[in-house]
Length: 304
Image 1 (tube, rainbow, N blue to C red):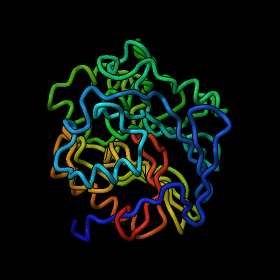
Image 2 (cartoon, rainbow, N blue to C red):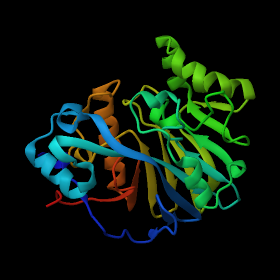
Image 3 (cartoon, rainbow, N blue to C red):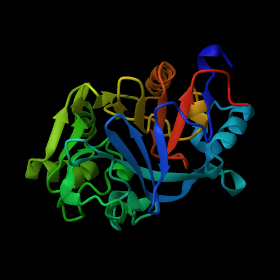
């Protein structure tokens, strides 16, 4: 493995200045950085419909072995890929909450054709003491079914009545060009109708200043308009990755491709850029689909 692909992921470790706490309610974990608290909320979990070896290409046996040590919960029987479907709530110091992604949704949502619905996001939020009316932002990393499920009800009513829903313009344009009426009619059109769709272009600071910021950054490849969210203080950061990486094997080797990436070459470049940035400062990766919600990333030698 070339030096650019070598990374250490410290399991059970602690990055200086970042506090990880065990949550007092099921299906959640919390982390603080600067003035922000990031709460990982498990919406659902279960096996993928393809074995891991069929979903990913380019991984060596050594890559799979390192990935297993990093995230053993992802490895089921007979090569099954077990994954979580996770959303993240960010408590803002000025009050209110930003929610990153909206899970698989209720029974009857578009994800019901392949994902374990109904999800549990609404009850997880309640257990965390977060009222849906207090959610001011819903940042959708991309418009795949397992990430927008709780955005609106099957009847087209937004679940978060006081939120603006942040989506990259490139994402919506790609769906319109492809004529994806399922996604457009289920989530985009209802949010346009209520005036809650907030279409953005490129890097956007969503909250904070000085002591800490919450910023949406384009991370294309998985979809054309994919974005991630960086929660940063002057010394460190939490990166809510979305689907820049969906399995630990893509952490130990960012060149490994995922079958359902819209543009695998762009996705590889994006992974390298995101992980290279993570190596320059204390960083936790907040992942949607690993069975570990927060993975500390440190520069150094490969995971032994």
